[in-house]
Image (tube, rainbow, N blue to C red):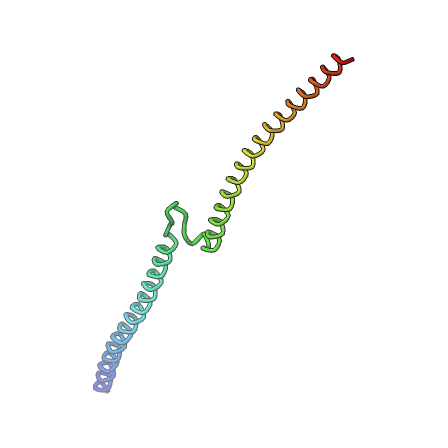
Amino acid sequence: MEQQLLQLGAGGLFALLVLREVFGFLKERVRYTHNAALEQMAKEVHEMHEWHAVTDEDGVKVWYIRRSLENTLDKLSHTLDAQTQLLKEMVLILKDTRNEMDAVIRETREIHREIRNEHRKAG
């Protein structure tokens, strides 16, 4: 009986040692898998941060502005510049027209004066 207890104790001790090694191995494997997943997630977060940190020449974050919106704003800016130039030219034309109209009015008044003076002399 003592022999059986001793064998049972030695067998149990051996089983305990084997289980401890197996569980230790499994624990390390789970930890490695968990660490690999965390490292992958950290890498992806870092890549996303780098991508979102990119700025254009004005310091504006690139991911804030759609390229089509930027192109539309550029076209609008060019159109406004062209309209501004046309308005300046129109103002110059209007000034010239006003000067010509003033000259015509002055000449008309002068002619009316001359006609009145001739009527006075004749009358």
